[in-house]
Image (tube, rainbow, N blue to C red; front, top):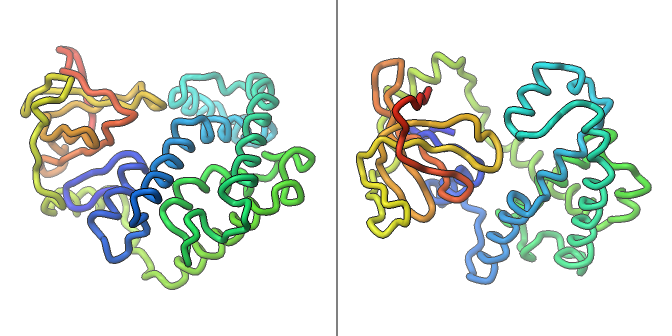
Length: 276
């Protein structure tokens, strides 16, 4: 996502920035205990194995798994084999874990038949943080064997997913129609814009010891770790990393922002190359 000349990487950071920069449409929790549930659900789905197991349940007969370009791309992203035999081998273990995750929601947060995770009148950010892997799997034909995970076995979870789909459909129908831009036109608009956020400082007590203005590299450590962005360190906090890179079009500086959690930052090596 880009807002002006700020480019935001990772959905976790994107959601946080939308909450901050567009408060009139914020969906985040307002109470400390609800903030805690919201944050824990984010870490559960991203770091706690939910998404990883969900990805392992992509049906082995899906046509995409016959596409060598797709499987090579997924292998580079995840660091594991996407050969059909290996996908089949992983399914039983992944299915057992996912069954336990459906059961967790069914018997705890959704046990009292609440409509939304935080007992709110409409869906909140906590619902979004928790639901996306379950929603994705429920809509993927062949991913979930009905004798293991189904609406009959987990009615509260599937009802929650159904409410979520209706809420998303209603939001889309009432929202303005987005303009479509080709890549080159989008780049022109980005480099011609101003920054969306003010420049912050580097935390002097940060354990990395890095200083503002140093040449650094940033890369994710959960997936996609083969790609590293290189640039001048602009800001570093416990929540966010910001580096400056020069665009190839217009020779303008752009701020690339990533979460601190789930990303690694280090001084750039002599032969490091970063592409924008």
